[in-house]
Image 1 (tube, rainbow, N blue to C red):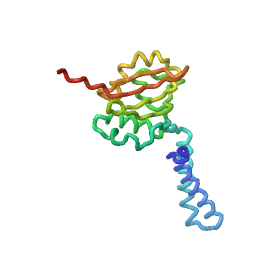
Image 2 (image 1 turned 135 degrees about the vertical axis):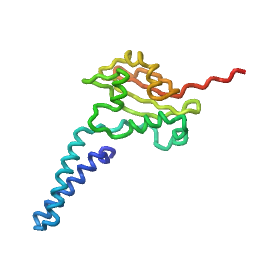
Image 3 (image 1 turned 90 degrees about the horizontal axis):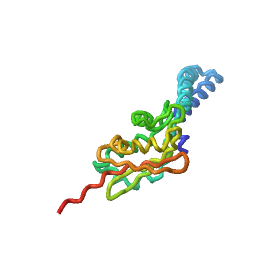
Image 4 (image 1 turned 45 degrees about the vertical axis):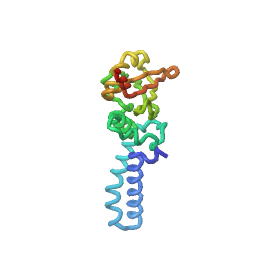
Length: 185
C-alpha cells in the first residue's frame, strides 16, 4: 500500500488520468477537453515515470507512529526526531537513505552502499532513542566500529552510538542519549 501512495505513483497516476481524458476528448471531437489535458497529461505522466524510476522507499517502521509521541516531542529528542523524519521520507535520485551522512562518515561505497532496512523507536532510561538496522553492503562492520564514537556525535550532541552485528551482512546502530551522571553527594 505504501508503494501506491508514493509521490512518484501519485504524479504518474495523475498524468495517466489526464492523458486518458484528453484522448477520450480527442476521440469524441471535443477540442476544449482534449487539448489542455493532453498537453498537460503527457508531460506529467513522463515526469511521474521519471520519479518512479529513481524512487527509494522509506525503510520499514517497526514502532507504531503514536507509541513514543510524547517522548519524541521533548526538546532533548530533537536531533533524533529530525533523523527519524528524514529517513522515513521517500527519496529520489539517491542510492540509499542517509547517503550524504554516510559519505561524510566515510561509511560509503559507491558500488555497494549500506542500505537502511528498518527504524525502531526506543525508550531508554526516560530518554528517546532510535535503532537503525542496516545491510552493510561493501562497508565492513570493522569500519563501522572504528567510527562508533563519531556516529553518536555526528547525529546529535549528547548521543551515544552502540553497534551490534546482525548476521553476515547486517548491523544494528542504536542511538541513545548519554546517561546523566548521578550527582555526587
